[in-house]
Length: 373
Image (cartoon, rainbow, N blue to C red; front, side, top):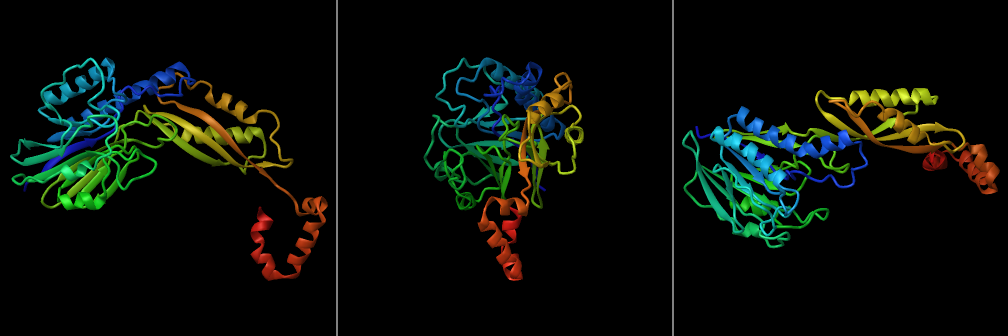
């Protein structure tokens, strides 16, 4: 049985500046700045632990075209670990770390194979004697609008064919439409696996053959919520196994908390504390965006700065925690209860409306949404 295994990761964005987050306390901001490197370490650890045949990094290894020395050095350190274990790495560069950037280059070890600006084929003979063809290209400039998928041409003679592509599927409007392609385009190539990059949200577009966006390896802002990671992939004559491996060191989470049961501020605080505690993970940092709903307010106003006061209390003693949960923001959805009598007092129109509804049960059912508004 001819079998291969590999790690597929993309959108590392090493040393991302975490724009707009400098308001965070220094220990937390430092942890967040370091998080992309910690995520990279988890990728190499997974590759070594699973004794994979190779690793694929499908674009945007660096956050910018300058590729600062710190990011290059940390990448080189991890690639050397893989070299020691005889694990080759196949790299394409994307729109963020395209080949036209200006940087002081730090050479990578010989096990790292980087694709050039034209679609090329790199061949691999695994330790078990399996032939693999890997197809890919690196962005020559930041914006690649061409359909590079047309240049992927299957070359016979290999046991497995894997396409590596940093691009946009189906012209998704929320992303730059770089190197666009469709699912049908990929199917026509008759490859065994498509290792995609560019979209930061994890997605399995197709299972047979597998077409995978692994997402980025570490969330960098409040829009990139949930655990991030890479895929450990096993392909054989009889199976296609896809295992998601978490790599995030800091996780962004959005939580909507129903606080209708809280009759006073103390109970409200306790509910928030319980929620905060439920998101604490061993050796994992969490940034929580908290929304409170159904807060019972009789007069239509909160009074004071309840959200700011809650936030200050909930942020206390979290800065030095190894497994901290930092509530980044609190949003209170105000709910004001308006009685029927109050509406009637405001305008005669409401009195006539309610009288009409009360006389007709059908109307009452039809206008039920109005009552509850």
